[in-house]
Length: 339
Length: 263
Image 1 (spheres, rainbow over the protein chains, first blue to last red):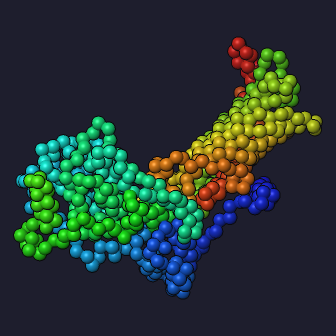
Image 2: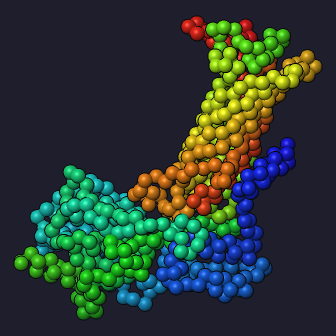
């Protein structure tokens, strides 16, 4: 019966111009897993042209390194090296607890963020936690918000509560340094409190086929303030560093469009490709950038966003338990208040 | 025993008496099944797993064309799981079939079916990707055929039945090749026309019914082959499931109570 059904089905397919799905099965061998990974990237990765990577040449380079008798450990190392050719923090290979993520977007750059100084000298023991956001009113009547990860949940009520508490402040420092990203909808939710009207903030598009240049038209992304919620239209300084990645990168891009916002610190780490995931025959998971985002001027932000004001942490300030970026932001907001 | 035999035949062979509607109803549970799921929106690998199902069918002769048209309702739920994916698909089909009796003892029904499906395949190991699931939502029109044959095995009536349904044209809601759910939420739902060039599906239901004193037992083998290539995303779902359940035949007198035909 199964054979009858199989051949009957194939016969139907033959009649209908061979439109059945042919599955390209890769063997669960090192070579099979290599080919599967190369093909997944070849068909789905979205930044080959932007990053000037010849993926066919990458195949020529790495295929000879794969043998079917190599260990999983060695195979993993070679595959991670191949993925690092695109220099993309969103591209990684998961094998149990290993991710093999690329970190070049922030390695060899100053961190410009010291958690000890922040916790001991700024937040101290008297700060507030609402949802996943830490916040406090500093001595000079400036509101300080620390958001650690965009994967941490935040609600409209959380934002109402925080901004209402800051109602007598003349400025806010919104610190997203070393925030590795997370949920884009949280970026949208927070950014929407700092804008007065519907504002174009970004573009996004996606691959429409397997070719490296197969993309859809760019879709505009707007932010608009939520009705009936507390808004903040006074000055805001957003603190950034090289470890602001992915959804944080998008958040900084959104906020850069608002007239009351100044970004301060270092260039963000980028990560403007919405990642997709897939898996190899051996069960290892692969994550890769699949859907590019752009700023409101249709410029690429995959390589990061420059701040309005570049500032690095100084050793002198560090020795004095001062965060140079926070102090600069405070001076800026205070000077704006006196104008 | 004679009543059972006549009862089953009457549903499909003799025109029902005036002002009475012959109705056949069956509910089965898929107890042993195998599923092969391949969906390139989620992963590029093919996985095999276990399939379970729920199948409910109702069929009755209508007053159309001198009561030669049978109307059928089909509900089908497939739930499958493999190493990295889980799948749930809910389907409803409504069909009208013309009855033919070209051969003694055989009944054939041929007609069309309107069919809708909603469901999805979820990636159990999405690792934070923006493609954690693929949603299947579509409506289609297709062809349906039934062949039934009544026989006796050691004086025990046994009915064999086979039904095949093949969708022909439809409308699919389907994401673009690399379109994330985030981007879909910002735009209109992408609707795609589907037919044999990008949508091939066939459901085969082979059943054996054996009436006993208090119930008619139905054992079915259901084979479902579903393949789509839409926006360069490819889906292939093949299931083979053994269903076990009960059937009943009854008449409905309009304005009066249901009369179980076996009485």
